[in-house]
Image 1: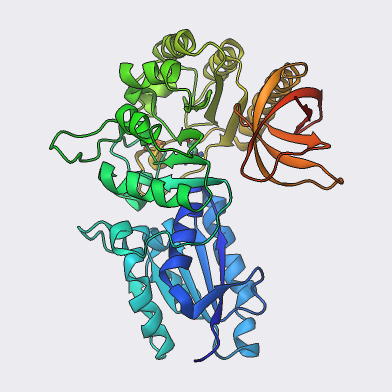
Image 2: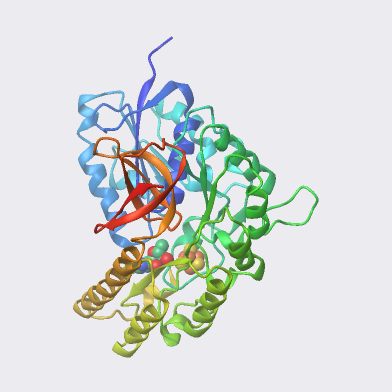
Length: 439
Ligand code: 5AD
Ligand code: SF4
C-alpha cells in the first residue's frame, strides 16, 4: 500500500465553508491525511468566500504565494473550491495557471473523480448546479472522534436577493436537505462525541426539508426532533432572515431546553429607506417588534446581527437610524462591514458613498457595538451558567468552553472533561472571555 498523500485545506468565510471543508476531507477518503501547513502538502484546497471584494482578492494573492511550492514538490496539486470558484470558474485557471482544479459548492460530491483526473495530469473544472443532493452522495460522517461542537448544513442557497449580496448567485436557489438525512447525520455525530450541533444555512430559518410522511418539516419541527436525540445537549442555528422567523420557531426558543439562548438575526441597516433599496422586505420597526416577541418567549436571549455601512446613497440620517436601532436592541455580538460592490448584483450599478465617510461610520458603529458586547459580557459576572467544555486551557487544570450565550469561558481548577457540560459561576470578565469556577 502506498503512503497516504497530504491534504491541506484553507477555509475562508462563513461556517458553511468550515462544514464543507470537513466533508471534502472526508470525501477524499483514506488516500489523504490532513496536514496543518501548505509546505508539505500534496494537495492544497483553498475553500473560498466571495461575499466581499477583499475576500476574492485574498485568494489570488494566496495562490501567488503557493505557486512556488510546485517547484519543490512535483506531486503538488492546487485546487480552488467555494464561492470564488463558483463565481469565477475557468477565469481562475487563466489568471493563475498553477491551479489544477476548480469546483463550485454544488459539485463537491464529484471531488474524488476530479482528484483522480488531476492526478493523471489533466485539469478539472466543475461549476454546475446538479440536481442531486451532494451531501447524500458524499461519504458518511465516519467514526472519527469529534470535537464536542459541530456544524451541520441543513439548507443552502437563498431566494431573497438582497441587492448587495452574491449568495443567490454563488450558492444558487434555496434547497433544504430532507429531515431524515439531517437527523441521521446528527445521530452519527453524537455517536462520535458531538454534544452541540449548530444547524447551518444561508437562510436556515426558511428550512423546509421533506419529512417521511409527505409534509415538509419547518426548522422549529426539525429542532424539536433533534432535541429528542439522547446525548445531544445543545442546539443552535445560523443564519436567519427576519421574515422567516415564524411563530413556531419563536415558541421553540421558550420551550425547547436544548435550544440555546443566542440568536443571529441580521438586519443590515436601521433606515427604512436603505432597507427598501437593499430589497430586505422588512422595516426597522418590524425587526424591533420581532425581537420583542422573541424576548417575550426567551427573556435572556442574547442577540447578534450583521450590518452594512456605506450602502450606496446612505445619508448621515440613514446611518444615524442604524445607530439608533443598535442602541435599542443592545447586541451581545454584531458584525459590521463596509459595503463592498459585488459585480452582477443590483446595487453594483449605484453611486457609492465617499470612502472616508463610510470608514468613519464603520468606526462609530463598531465602537458602539464593542461597548454593548462588553457590557453584556461583563453582566455575566456573578451568574451561574453552563459551559460545554471544548478543550484544555493554557494554565494547569484550566478548561475552556462556551456558555449557553456563546461566550468563551475559562474554568480554573476544573474537574470537567472535554465534552461535558459543567455548571459554573462566572467570577471575572476579560476582554474576550469570562473566567469561572465550577459549582
Ligand atoms: N458588502 C458588504 N457586506 C456584505 N455582506 C453581504 N454582502 C455584502 C457586501 N456586498 C454582509 C452582510 C451579511 C454578511 C454575511 O456579510 O451583512 O449578513
Ligand atoms: Fe444574501 Fe442573506 Fe440577503 Fe440571502 S438573505 S441575499 S444570503 S444577505
